[in-house]
Image (cartoon, rainbow, N blue to C red; front, side):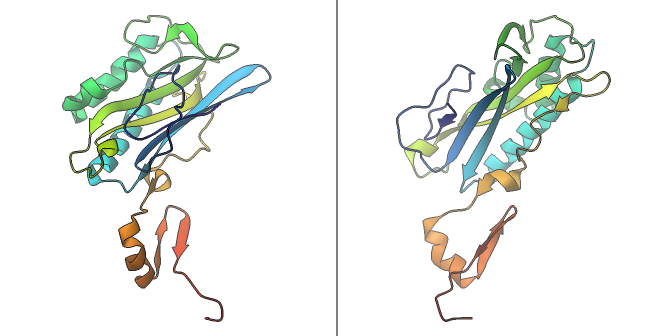
Amino acid sequence: APIIQSGGKFNLKASAFSNEEKLHFGTITCSLGARYKSYCSNVGRTYVINPTKEQEKHYKLLLELQTEAINALRADATASSVMVAVQNRLRSKAPHLLGNLTKNCGFGTGLEFRESALQLNTKCEKRLRPGMAFNLALGLENLEQKSAKSARDKTYALFIADTVLVSESGPAEVLSEKAPKAWADVSYQLDDDDDDAGAEAGGGRRGNVEILSQRTRGKS
């Protein structure tokens, strides 16, 4: 079953599960796994409703960290070097967020969803080999939104996961790349207070979706 979390309560571990609370508009994390011919895969995305500039900045930074991890996932590199590369990138860009970074950036996956002996943390010294598959999962958790009007929006998390494959040479191949994750594809402006203004302005656009102003029957 997919793992969907919102409303300020986030657990970015692979063992997390959805709770019984109603979905809360704000920050929503989603993870979905699938099995094909006995092999496991996983994808995770974050959707942000009515985002702030700071949330946009943090999300784009998370995309940078994932790119750093993909570039570090190379044949003959150690598993620990991937997490070290991510930490170094974050340390150079936003050192105050190091405490918010997940403790690892994923694990090996295959016939078993989670290969516990092949984790992308700072301790695993196993060498990466071509053909190895990983659930590359990165997140920033316990982030604070000081301008939040609702108590459920004061704490949020950002999360991205993709299934990647170690290549013969060069960076890892992202097998789940067709699942959109650019900021324009995961952020939505749905303020109720802006409904009238949006109609007067003739609608708007979010990512590849155009929001048209309401047209009554009989009007051209």
